[in-house]
Length: 117
Image 1: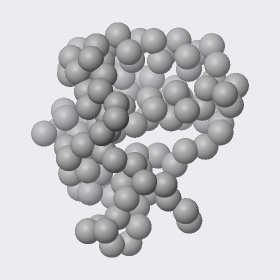
Image 2 (image 1 turned 120 degrees about the horizontal axis):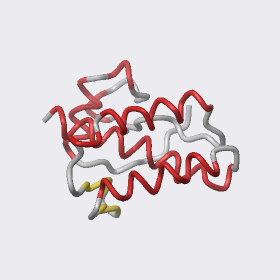
Image 3 (image 1 turned 60 degrees about the vertical axis):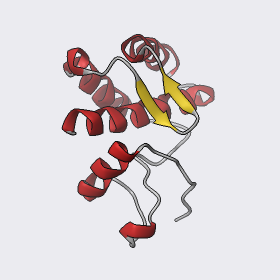
């Protein structure tokens, strides 16, 4: 399986390392590349509903800001999540928006890591 490098902040890496059943990673944890969910062109309605429900359940606990990776800093995280809900509802069947939907899964993994820390 081919994995693309993803730079995740340390709290995300710690959470992903401690929860291997919920991640895809190579066999060597010290050298592994962590990915919260495999990227794909189409996400099922169940997957999208699950991630949206998680955010709705934990919305009050979400941090104000989030460092998603080395290049992505989200200043108003709660507002951004709400905007991504709209993308999921309106464009879930359009593969053009699969990158944004995938990013919602990455945001969930990082938010979970921060909530557990």
